[in-house]
Length: 157
Image (cartoon, rainbow, N blue to C red):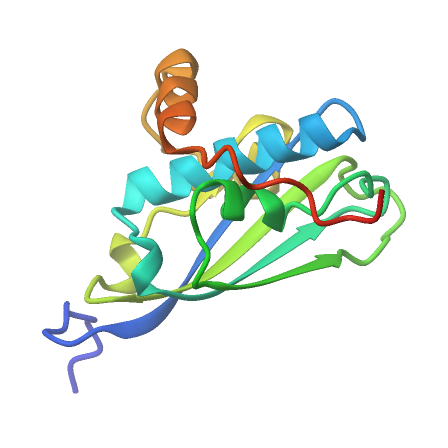
């Protein structure tokens, strides 16, 4: 029996993981860090929002100033089911960390998917550290071109 996975002609649901760290527990830092991570996941994998079934955003317990899913709405992900949660507060674990799990309908194999671990979170999955160099200024310009200025936080004021 051949266990080698091959691309399919029809989409299957695959998980795409990513994680990053940020410097501060502020709405701006949470949204910027989440947008950067999500933008890299989108660009490295060729993800279109209409192919994403759902996304789970988690933060460590020291990040609570904003819902990271707002960043996806800012990038016009209006028809994707989004959920935010806190990670388990394991002693000694990485702090100020944002993680994303996308459920993506794709014809790519699991091996073809690029999981994205950046900044301090790169040490969580060193085997996933083979990403090409990131031009952060160019990435920020791309994010700015995608931002929907009408999306604001939905947290209580």
